[in-house]
Image (tube, rainbow, N blue to C red; front, side, top):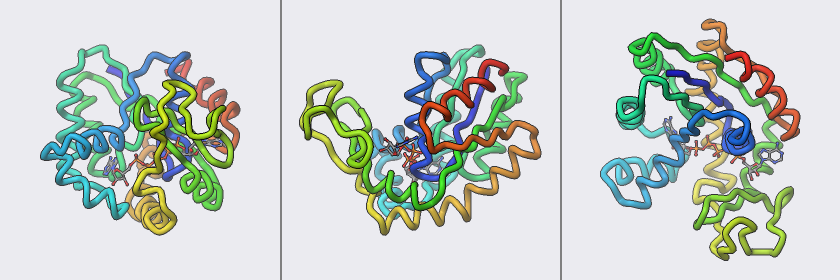
Length: 216
Ligand code: AP5
């Protein structure tokens, strides 16, 4: 089993990078945010529990996330390769991942830290729009669909703004990142797997990650 991590604040481009890498690296993209949003939509027990935390920009309790990931790893094969996006977010989640990987004689190969100034994050997140049908991601400042309001990929006209992508909730998400997730930078630095990636230019970000990816 192999695992790499995309680490960084909201809007640093974790989901975008994962999308850009999918042609070149064959690691399964696992976004806990996407898993939780699907659970909320399905009104499953996990979704019902997660909804209020997500709406406020708070972290969903570790127990819920740990169960989601343990189930995923258990269902996968021993030679699976995962690219985690938005997980882990606390030291407890990171320790759980280490323990699970150790069970397969493995460890985290690389933790890519996407670094972007805060003012850029705010502009990106408040400008993000998503196609409800196929999940394609747009931005009103930098990446509009060719025809306004129509998804380039699937033609749907249901393009929406995530309920937690407003300035007030975003400020809380950024504070939560500083308070609860930024400690993972030191965690993975100490483990010798942290790779800092300047993430303002999409192409340069992808190239820098690929340089390291080919060695893991
Ligand atoms: P989650 O969905 O993980 O949200 P997040 O971490 O806040 O990250 P985002 O998806 O907002 O940003 P991103 O870095 O992927 O940026 P993107 O590529 O889309 O989590 C949501 C919630 O779920 C959390 O608040 C929490 O409640 C809960 N949760 C999830 N995981 C959890 C866990 N492990 N533990 C506890 N709770 C958990 O890019 C953003 C925008 O910028 C887009 O419009 C994009 O087009 C644009 N953009 C990206 N890169 C560039 C670039 N280089 N140049 C120009 N524009 C760019």
